[in-house]
Length: 115
Image (cartoon, rainbow, N blue to C red; front, top):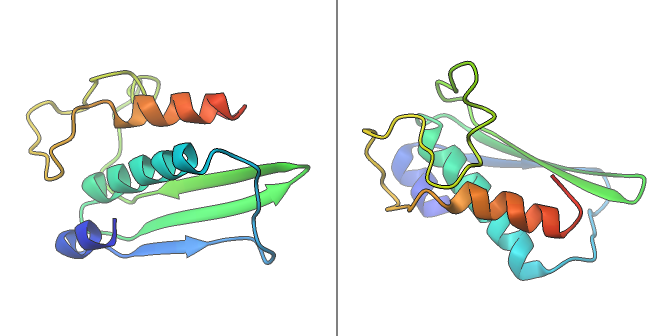
């Protein structure tokens, strides 16, 4: 996602636990989750930083991706992971997405017992 972030004027900042975050997981699916979340954040971050945070506790790994774009309207957060849903259908996309990325990401997370 770095080349896209550079084109958008964003930085991707990775913050994590003091110790390595290790998980037994399907690397292909986890990479797809992270890629979808980070690219989406860069796309909607309006040129601001995107912060990726990792943490581990109680045998679980947590990942949070935060952008500082305009955000969602009330009630839209419950729909953002639905297939083909867009907050603004008229908005131009630079990555040529299909509207499936976040729905695939949430399904991959569920397959790992996450949400």
